[in-house]
Length: 332
Image (cartoon, rainbow, N blue to C red; front, side, top):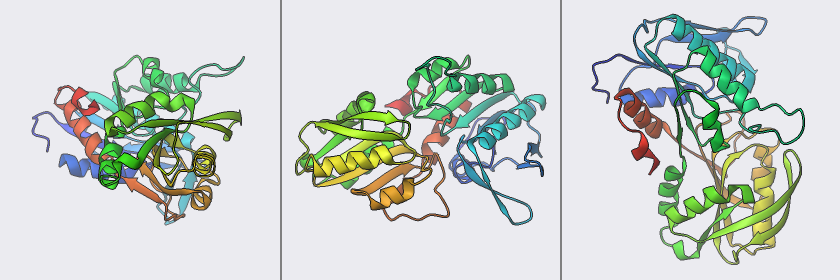
C-alpha cells in the first residue's frame, strides 16, 4: 500500500493490461484512466483522461506482440512495433502534460537481440530503442531480465533490471523439495552459463551445460552435453523462448543422449512465436514455466505451459522507486 503523500499514477498500453491491473491491485491504487488505440490507417494514438501534472507516473508496457480489443467488438493482431509506438506516444503525452517523473515499466524489453554488431552493416537495434525511449521523455526504466545486461548502458537514464530467478527459485524449491539430490540445473547454451550458474547456486544444485552450434537464426543443432544428467530431473533455464526450437532440441538431447529422467524448463519471457506452442506440446519437456511479462496466448492452449505472475515484484519495485528508497534488496 502506498502511504507517501506525493501523487502516483500507473498508466498502461494494450500489450499487457492484465499485469498493469494486478500491479495496481498490489499497490492499492486504481489504474490510470487512459485510452490507447489506433486510427483506421493503423496510426497509434493515446488519450489520458486525468491530471498527471507533477505526478510520479509509471507506464506499464511490454514491447511484445499482442491482441488489441477494438471499440466495435473486433480485435486486431498487433506487432512489437505497435507496442513500442504506444509506449513512446504515452510517454510523450505525459511529458507534454507536465508529469513530474515518468518511469517506463517494460516487463519484456523487445529489440534486445541485436545488442552489438556481429557482421558489417548490422544495426544495434537495442541502442536505437533506448534512444527513442529516452528522447520521448522517460526519466527512468524498470524492466526484467534483459537479453543482454550491457543494454543497461545504452540508456542515459537510470535502469533497474529486475531478476526473475527469485520467483523461479521459490517455485522449484517447492516443486522439488523431496527430490533435490536428484535434480540438476542445465544451461541451454554456453552463453547462458553465468545465469544458470547463479540460479543453480541459489537452488544448491549442480550444473550441466548443453553445447550446441547454431546454424542460422531461430534454429540450432545440439552437439554435446557437459555434465552427467543420467537419471536426473533437470531444470532448463533461459531468459526467453521464441520459436522454441533451441529449448525443445535441448530437452530431446538431455533425454535421448544424456539419459535424464524428466525435463522441466523455465524462462522469464514466453515470446512463443510461430510453431513454438506445438513444438512444446510435442517435445520431451514435462513442463515449461514462464513469467507473465508477456501475456499468455489467448487462442492457444498447451497443458505443459504454466505462468507465474510478476505483479508483486514489480509493485514492490515501483513502491521503492516512488518512495525514493533502494531497489537493491529486490535483487537478492
